[in-house]
Image (tube, rainbow, N blue to C red; front, side, top):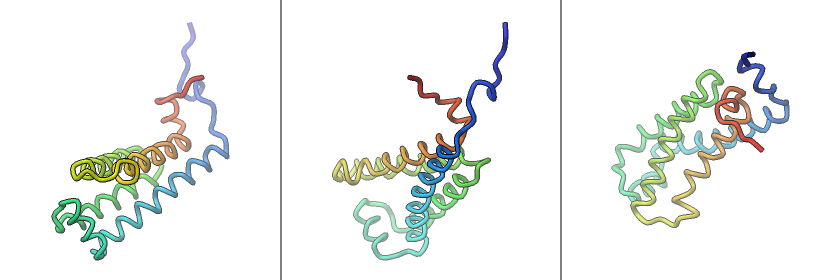
Length: 138
């Protein structure tokens, strides 16, 4: 009987796959950086959106800081999975907040799901270990 190591079981990622993963991660990163920056800068549109959702305004900056930490973790390859987990929790909270106030489903409630799918898809494309853990089979 033979044993197969993780390195033998998964093919090396192609350059195109790696680039596609970084492009998707970059798109999510740009959005999250903009959102975190707006929260940390305490801009009026953020305060209005928080009031509409029913969040205390005092939570805007801590949420922005959590976003920024999650984003930094996401773009560092060694901590990328941890960053994706942190941001998934944050996006789940956004989905729940919009569900609670009966926001439009496709444009508001599911927006966090879209961002999360793109984020995890980008990470899956650029991380061979994650592809081994979550394989897509034909």
